[in-house]
Length: 260
Image (cartoon, rainbow, N blue to C red; front, top):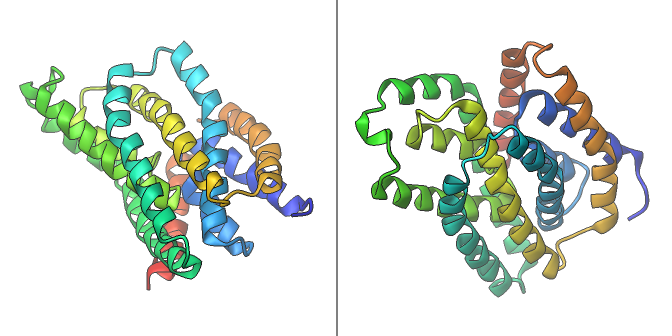
């Protein structure tokens, strides 16, 4: 693929929005790549590695701020990494019919976008609800809680590998329910720490199947790294709710179009 300024601009815009609102890059980047005419398999494979490289910087910042609960990250990864490998194996098994894989990815992508849009809009309400109904059982990390965390990991592993979406918005919202007493910055930091190994494993798996465009990846990163930096600087200065709701509505319509 030749150099296209459009991909650098797309990276810049998505990076800026992620830095500003923390809304997942995958839920924005994959639909943009489809709009540019990139095949679904390549869009997902490239976006997964794009997310892994982008979020590595996030781990460094959040670890410095002590915003990562490594125990929760470990339990999530215990479910998500094997689920990602299993999903990749299934995709590889049906590799002969590329059009079937593309339609499965498009359909899964649509549903992931619909759920993500709902998760973004009701995130605050879910947080309040989960904190209000947090009983004593949530004060300690119980065995049940650990098993449920692994189960969430399995769900995220399969969803993220198929669609490159879900590590951010869906992951954070499901963790709100399980760990309502954990402060929001720690939830976000923990989810970012979990997203890196997951997107890296899924991305390398897709790359091994030929679902990766290195030139495209380079152009996206060229835009997104300065974009995230600028967005992070302006974070809190722009009405967050307005931006989040606008993004959620846009994602809902894209998801609806892909599914129906």
